[in-house]
Length: 372
Image (cartoon, rainbow, N blue to C red; front, side, top):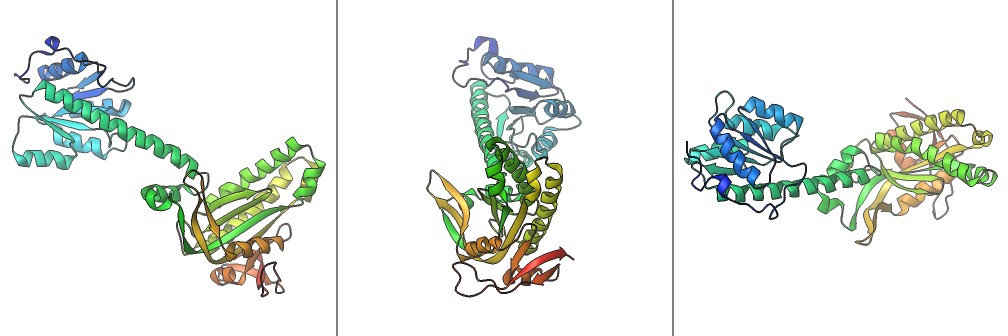
């Protein structure tokens, strides 16, 4: 069967410097006809591409599972699994969904092309094909694949950065609409803010070598920070020996307040376990005081285009910070607004009205005793 309308591949010289093949790239050619496979393989190898071949759809899937191809060129009419089904299988597999697929067919009717498009085909090559057209399409599809890989690589790096601040699920929400979530600006949101401060750490730092102080602080933060993410909170910052974070942004939930409270309870439990495991005698004198407040605040990216921080600003933040200062080591103190959202889930002890710095009116607060 004469597939090509141009001279044999051995008679054509392609410049491998035009679109150099990347080291790990390879093209998978799938056709049940050995002659068709060899013709296409010869053209591609002459151009400098690494090529693997398969004589069936099943064999092609086996090869792709072992090493993801950069491009698949497949024939439509094959016994068993035809090209449409193979294309659909490749596009539905997370490993190969971004791999471009070129369909080679003698069928020129629009319904056949539509069927290939519905299966996920990215390009067509009609028999007998022009080898120059084929090679141009190959270069174009590989260029697109490389762009996809570059985007995926950048997204992977961005995920790694974002996962330091938010739960992995929230990271995916941010990446689904980066123009919204990764630009300067903010909005008013109902959030629950917490501050967790290590009581007695200043005295501890004065009495210990700097290296040990940093080691202990990093150990504590390393144990407490994952708890923030576990309950879908957002880590805002570390301030000295203090952790600040919030719930309700960038993704809000009706459970934000109770998640913050549950996080605080687990933080206290983990901190107590840490005190038992750490060897420095003065570590026993430390405690964790946590303050939680719910209210409206401005939430968004603050800074400049070069350096920005996703944070919360407003009286709600100040109230939570001042409240935390009232919490003794081992205590969790919440405001009335937080209590109203979690009252069915907690047991509390009402505190005397607190006169917080910067607040003209006293603040009603509660010490959290336990979860119900």
